[in-house]
Image (cartoon, rainbow, N blue to C red):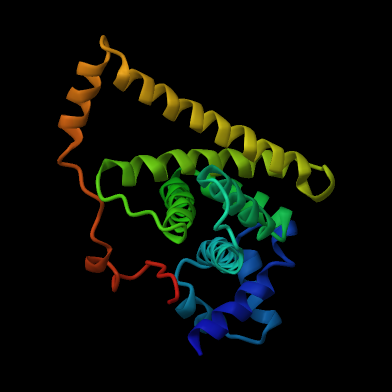
Amino acid sequence: MTDTARTRLLDAILPHVPFDGWSDISFQAASRDIEMSIDAARTLCPRGAIDLAVAYHRRGDAAMVAAMDASDMSEMRFRDKVATALRLRVQAMDDREAVRRASSLFALPQNAAEGAKLVWETADHIWTTLGDTSKDVNWYTKRATLSGVWASTVLYWLGDDSPNAADTMAFIDRRIDNVMQIEKAKASLKKNPITKPFMSLKDSILAGVKAPDKSKFANLPGNWNRPT
């Protein structure tokens, strides 16, 4: 019942966001629209509109994961699987003004950590759904790199007026190619007799870094667990 009520509240706030942003004004208007008391609404969303902005982002992530699960990517190169996942996430952004206002909200200093967490979650959902099995420092570098790609993609998409966001889709391909060039450069450094000792030293220093054990955090509040 709680999830259903929160979904109703989220749907109700979206028409107000283009005019008043993810604000308390919009939050109160949404509660009135669905005849929910403001006290009940604040019980569902203690931080008000920002909780709904977070829910809106996670709704897009869930739609992306569902679309990935429904897609046959078995014959794709891995870089194409990642690019496809990013395209599906773009397609899940169904309200440009809601995303624009959310981007502004999470750019505020007091909300920046929350925004960074959401970007990281998107990257984590992509890698997890694609079956990433890394347990070392690569777990972090993969998600950090993809977080940067996703954040820049959102900014590009907000200014993209091409049909079906064609320019954004091409932008994704360019960014993925940039990442692949970096990986090729790192591989070359490991093979180069001059730089190989330094790369080996780096690897030995980072050898103790391990991926987090998500089972220890699964029941903590604020975590999104992919449905099985």
